[in-house]
Length: 481
Image 1 (cartoon, rainbow, N blue to C red):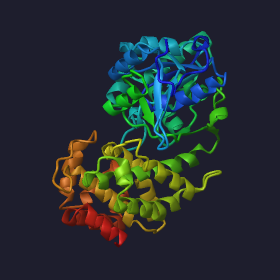
Image 2: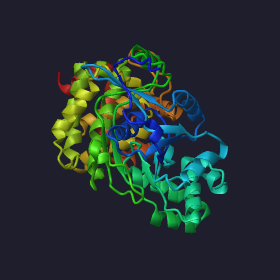
Image 3: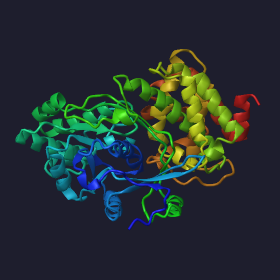
Image 4: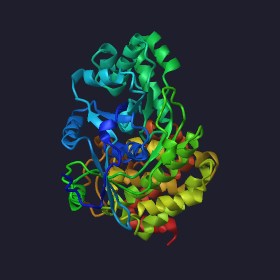
C-alpha cells in the first residue's frame, strides 16, 4: 500500500518492465539527482525502458548505500529545493545495486554482459589518479600499482572496467561506452587516460585496443546537490518518506555531452540534455564562472564564520567581491559558448548561489582547495596575467585561501582540517605569514607562475592586509568602500 504523501511524484512506468543497459559506478547524491533523473524523465515518457541502471561501487562506503537503497527497491528520493515550493519525487531508473566485494567480481561480470552498453562514473574529481605536479595520470598510485599486478582482482573502477572489456573482447562482444559524469575539464579524456594508462602497465597491446575501440565522451554536468544529513532526512519525513538517504538539490540542472556512443544511448536530448561537439566551451564557462565563483565566496565566508552559502550571498562585501572578480577578471577570459550569453549565465549562477532552500555550506565550498584552486581559479589568473589584465581580485582570492589554511578564523576560532593535504597546507600558510612567496611556490597549484613579479606583489599585498586588518576590512579596501 502506498502511504506516501500525495505531493510525492512516483514513476509512471511499470518498473517490472525495465531491463539494464547502464552500470553506474559511484552512487552518490549527485548521480541520483542528475543522470538518474534525466533517465527517469525519459522512462516517464515511455522510452528507454531497456536502459535501466545497475548501481555499483568499489569503496567500502558504497556497501552502506547499497544496503539503504536495496531496502527501498532501489528507489531514490529526490527533493528539489525551489524557493517557491519544494517538490519531491521517487526516481526509479535504477533496478539493482551490485554487491560490493573484494576483487569486484560481481561488477566485472555485470559489465561483461552484452546488454550493458554504457558504464558511467561519479567517483569524485580526486578519484582519477591524477598526479598533482603534472596533471597527468599517475601510474605510481598504490591502487593503480595493485591493479597492474592483479588485473583479475582489481580494486579500482578502472581496473574493473578493463577486466570487463577484456572478457567482452574474448567473447566477441562490442565494448561499452565509458562515460564520466564527474566535474573535471575534459572528463572523457581524463577517464581514457586512466583506463588506457592502467592497461599499458600490464598489457600494452590491450591498451592499444582500448584506445582504438572504446569511446570516452566528454561531458559537462551541473546541479548543486548538498550532502545528506539529519536536515535532509527530516525533510523527506515531512513528505511522508522514511528514507535514510534522500537527495536534495536545486531546481536547476544542466548536462552537455559529446554524442559519441557507438553502442547506443538513451534519447536524452528529449529531456533537456545538450549533445554537441563543443562541450569544452560549456565546460570552461561552468568551471570558471560557477566553480570559480564558489571558490571566490568560500574563504571570506569561512574566515568570517558564515555557515551557509545563501547567508554569504546576503553579505554585501562578499557579493561585491564576487561581482567584481567575475566581471573584471573571470568572464573576460571565457571563450564564447554557443547560444549562451555569459552575462546572463552569471546572473543565473548568482541566483542559484542565493537559494536559501539548498542550505549549502561555506565549509563544503572551502573543502579540498588544493585540488580545486588549480582547476577553478588559477586558469583565469594565468589568462589575466598573459593579457596584462587586472589581477587584484584573483590575487585576493588566493590570499583568502592561504589565510583560511592557516587554520583560524578572524576571531581566532580553530578551523577543522578541510583538505586532504591540510597539515602541509597549514604549515605553509603559517610560513607564508612572514614570507608570502612560499605559498605561490606550490607547483601543483600555481605551476610556473610563482616567478611572476606582479603576482608576487599583489598576493603579498592582500595576504599582509588580511593578517593585519582582517577579512572585512580587506574586502572594503578592495571594493573601495
